[in-house]
Every structure is written in structure tokens, then in C-alpha cells.
Image (cartoon, rainbow, N blue to C red; front, top):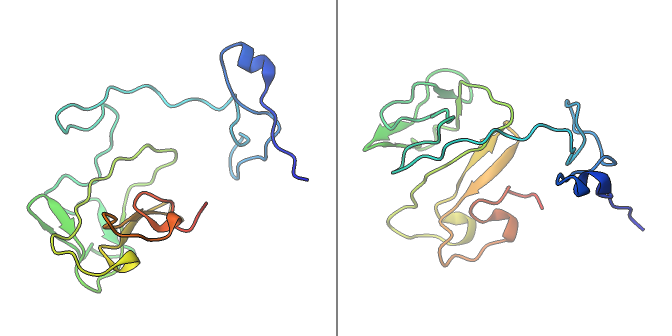
Length: 157
């Protein structure tokens, strides 16, 4: 029978939550759901489509500055009308900036002409840390598997 972590009752009574009997996170001094891990700073939310006060904007709608091909070299995608679009068979692009903990905001548009179904319809993704794919999919009225739908961590539970 599996054992589950136990919330630290003393911390809970002090208005905090967390655990102290969970596995250590790789490359970190903290364990999973560690009560001692610093919380993210409170930021001022953006208004009228402006980014939050602490945002690092990776795409300004005008250029691919700060992006490169995943294989090295210039980013081969196109920029038009304030958005970036993949050039067919050009491969992935990656940010030249490196990050640790993040909050991210993503805007995307699905193809205006609906064609295909399930994973064959407007399928893309955003990789975090070159490891976890956040699924981007034209998911409206488009049944697919749960860990492959829009905003899912693809293939994870």
C-alpha cells in the first residue's frame, strides 16, 4: 500500500501549508511542496493587454530578436501582422534567454480554416526547459486524449 506525504500540522496552524516528508527536487535544496521554499513575489497584473509588471516579453510582435533555430543559427520563422508563424519544415525555434522558475502567458490563434481532427488539427506546442511540452491545439469541438488537449503538459498525468 502506498504511503502519502503528511501535511505539517504545526505550519498549517500558523497559516502556512507544505510538507517536509516528500522527495527532494532534482538540483534544488527543496523537497516537493516544501514549506520553506520561497513563494513567488506578488506582481501588478497587466491591464488592457499589457504584460504584468515583472514580465520578460519574449516576442514583441515585430521581430524574432532573442530567438534562434533549435539547431543553432537564425530563427527561420516569419513575422507578420504582430505574430510569428512557423515556416513549413523549418523546425523548432528557442529563446536565447534562459530561465528558472517562471509564470508564463501565451497567446495563440488556431487556423481559420478548420481541417483535420484530434492531433491532426492545428497542433503545436511550447517546450519548457526543453523538456515539458505545453500543448497548443485547435481543441474546439475536437475530441482527443486528456493529456494531449490544449494547455495539457503533453503526455504527462
